Image: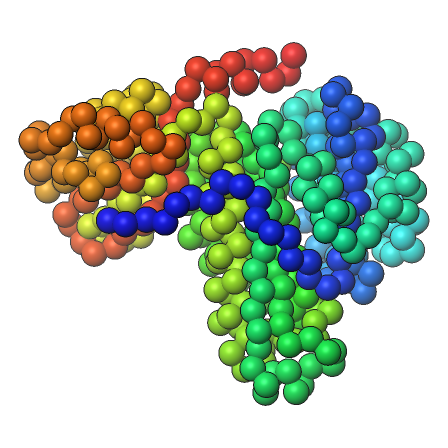
Length: 417
C-alpha cells in the first residue's frame, strides 16, 4: 500500500484566459482583513455548480441556483464575501444578496442573473450588504488578469483557514484540435481556488471551490465531469462530519482558448486535469483542517460496492473515539473495528483485516501480533495510511480524514465570540 505525499501548500498559479480577479476589505471581518472578492469574465462563461446537501441553505445558495437557472448557465461575475454566511437570515438575507448582485450587475453592465454570489462565515447574522455595495466600484475597478489578483482573491475568501488553497493544471491539445480553434492557443489551463478548514464532510463541506478554465464547453458537459471529479475527491474527505449550509463548487469555462471540449481527445484530457485539480484542493483542505495534527488516508477495500465502502469510511472517519486515538497516535485498532461494526451493513467481523502503515494489526476480527512502537511512530507522523479490508468484494475507496484535537475544540468554542 504505497501513497504519494499529500499536497499541503498552494501550488503554482497558472492563469486561464478570460478571467480577472480582485479583492479588498469591506469591513465585514472584525479583523479588518480582506473579505470581499470578485471574479469577472468579460466575455461570459458557461457554468456548472454543485451545492450543499444540507436542508438548511444560505441565501447565496438560493440566489445562485436561481441565477444559473435564469441565465441558462451563464456567468459574467462572481462576488464572494467572507466573515458572514448570510444563512438563517430569512427573506431579508435573500434580499440583501439580490441587492449586491443587482448593484454589481449595474456597474458591470450585465444582467443580474449573470452575477453569482457566495458567502462564508458565521451563521445567523445579518449580512451588511451596505458595506459591500459601497465597495463594489473600487472592487470592480481593481480587477486584473494577474497572478497577484488571483492570489488576493484566494486570501480574501479565507475564514479559519491558515493558508489559501490553489491548484492548477495545463494540457496541450493535438494538431487536429488546434487547427479548428478560433484563437492562437494550443493548450487549455485550469485554475482551482478553494477555502475550507472546518465543517468539512462529504457531500461537500464548508467549502467554497471555484475552478476556472479557458476551455469551451456546454453546461451539461461541465456538470457531468464536475460531478465525477468531486465524487472521487471533494466528496471523499471529512474533518469533523458537519455538513455546511454554504457549500459551493463552481466550474466556469470562458472558452477563451478557442479549444472545444468536443475536439479530438480534449474531453479525456480535460477530465484528467479536472480530477488532478480537485484532488489537490481536497488534500490541501484536509491538511489545513482546524486543529489538525494528523491526516489519515483511509483505504477501505474488499467491499461489494463503492457505496458500501463509502459508508464504512464515513463511519470510521466520524467516530470520535477513533479520531481522538489518532490524535494521540494510539494504534487502537479495536475502535476502528467497532466503528465498522456499527456502520449499518451486515458485515462479517471474522473477515475484517486492519492495517496501520502497512502493518496488519487485526486479522479476521481479532488481534494480530504487531510492533506497537512502529505503529505508534507511523501514526505520529503528519500523515498515515490506514487500511480496512472487509473481505466481501472487490470495490474500494480512498478517503481523507483527520484526528480530532483540543485545538479544534478551542477554535470552535470561540468562533462566534
